[in-house]
Image (cartoon, rainbow, N blue to C red; front, side, top):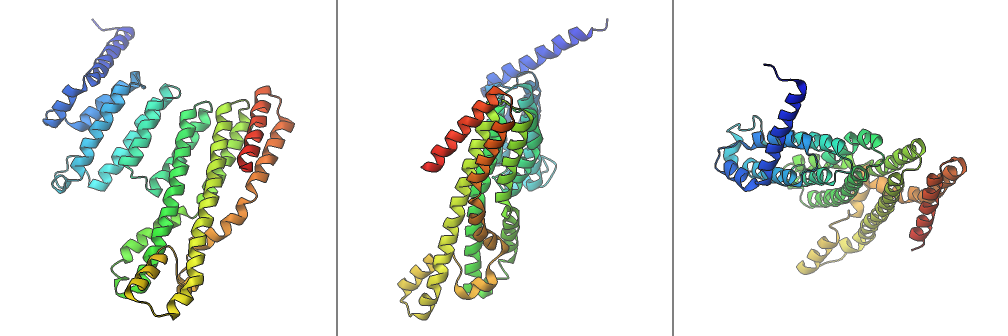
Length: 356
């Protein structure tokens, strides 16, 4: 006799619950994977099924990270690169794993509001599988935009975007320092220029992706303003705006710091180049030039990124003024009591923060 849809639903629920219980007894699951009895990819599929019914299950997320660590270790072994156990080249395999984990996290976050476990797992994947590369961070910033727009009360999603922006800021400043250092090495050792051409192209690509970072922060403020206007009275949006403005302020402080190092080296290059140094003194001068370019190369070797960095601090002076204007606009047009209260609290925070 055919089973009714209700009976099938109950049966599926029992199966999923049994799978979750298996993850709670994860030492046995780990033994099966380590012995080769259970394929780790199939284990991930089982975990994905369990998360459809229990999207916040800490045991399932913890076990999932352990399985991914096993795959990372396998991927680092040259012998596994030719076995095709994941059906693709190592880099492509990792890319597929990242994409699959992003999808799993999105589905789990959609099934349980403020699913801290899912978003924390997503950050872990970015750090250990995605390596926090600029491309991955920008892709995530773009792909999660619609999700947070549909979940304006979910602080976890906005906290994730704050993590993306903060990571981009840190990675961009690091990439710029490395790029300048590579240019110094190439100019001091012309014979190495061809050998490092590939690495230089990669650095240039990373630099190209980071050129519009201030714009990405500005776009996040614009998105936040649009959501605040469309969905008044959501404190999560105002908290997110505080954090994004703080990151914008932090970015504007990092850029002048980098420019100061470059400018100080530029101004001292002529004196250093015209004097005779002992080997120890020459080593010190080279260390001072790590983050800068000499005068002769500054006119030809500066990239568009360096020029943009020099212009950025001038634009940042408008940040606080624009925030105050935004608050005034909200207060003059809103009819929601909570919206007015959040806007007033944000103004007080701005005054206190900028006064420090």
